[in-house]
Length: 520
RNA sequence: GGCCCCAUGGACUAGUGGUUAGGUCACCACCCUUUCAAGGUGGUAGCACGGGUUCAAAUCCCGUUGGGGUCACCA
Image 1 (tube, rainbow, N blue to C red):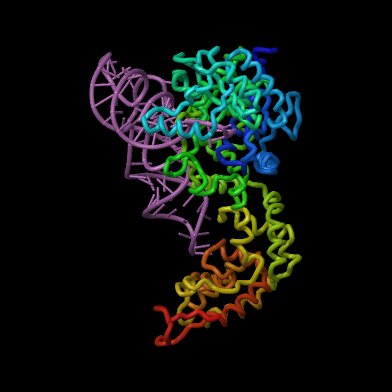
Image 2: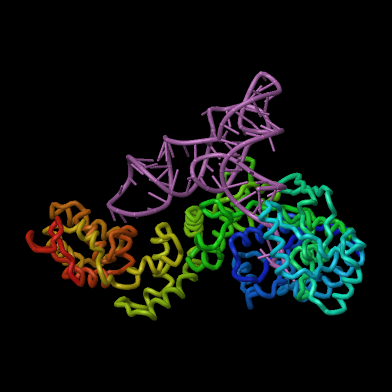
């Protein structure tokens, strides 16, 4: 049996298939992946499905899918294969049993027949006395320094009474190790419980299975969340029992809720899929999560990193120690950076299906072939890319590029309409009707010239024009927007809209301070 | 409660004995501007506290406080 893992860097992400990929899990996976890439090593995904009760059907596949979306690919896994399989713990039961027997033979582990009720009672008692709850070693055999006669144990075994196998933690020894991110850490074995290794259903516990698999799979670096730090002594003891060299450990700072507790559901989304569903792109999520607890250092002030760039610059040594609050606002900012930089074709490819779906839901007065064309979408993209929070908003948030407005933002109307607005507007519609050049430049010149002739400021027309043609009081440059809409659409929208927005006499009930009322 | 970890503005962080404590998000103001964004300029705001060590401490040591994690036949 090999006792030292190879020199080659091999990292692993070991999720349990109990649900969706958590952003904290994503970061753990990412750091493992990045470190392996940086060191020209291997990144392994291992499914830890030793808890049959919590196992969710299909969760393993969905985990891999989400991972794939973010660009993190495993060198070895249950889908990618590899020389160290199987990569699913429930398919490795025989292996664990074999090693468990070895520990039993070496008297590093013992059978325990205590029932759940007994343990619970014991725990309560100890808690009451202010002690750390620990197993009372009732079934520790005489041969191992306990008080249970071997005959008693044999009898239970022969009777087929369900049991559990526990490791025997040595009394009062000091367990020390060097954590890559935390430095030297020391535990007293007296504070370590006789951990269950094999459950009564024949499945190993996490602690046992992961130690064995990490060794067998020649994992060189265990990179995981800080919540595992306090179980390190158990794992180290196990390596000791087997006379194996433990992998290097790096315990990552936790991702936190805004109240600084461990990031959890309850306080918002935590599943990577939820963020993707909301419109965040995998690149932005990866970028953001990478920066939570790591930075390039050396005065580097970069904030935007592609996966490739992270692979080049990542280092475990520069991972911080303190927990980091998952701040969605900054994620949003990063998302915008990506939208600004993303190639036009890519965005068009992404939003086209969304547009198709919208077009199936409702009809439009515009020319469908035209508004669904690449040329048209390209113009929309360039007008909107700096104004949207998410790619999908180019369709949803900017529906006026595809559908005539059904209503007009009342507040905007109230703010922009005065008594003679509609009169001037009607006259301007006439001017537009005779204009064939609907380029932004010409529209601007035409509007400004007309306004001047009427003794009005351009804004007098600009705002009402925007509201009538788009329905809302904000958006891209009016002239460029109208150019994209095209003459036919612009005139139709103006004519339809002007009759719906009417100026009323001063004492009409329901009148606002400017004497405007909106009618459907 | 025991054990372990952590500690720079509201958030993410740079900083490893000598800096006017730097950057990003958010926030505020101004500029640009038809609006909304984007962009530009400027600004508010920080080394948890107390002791040491040192000529000198955000940086090293100790303590306090605060926060977190963990104490399952869950991972």
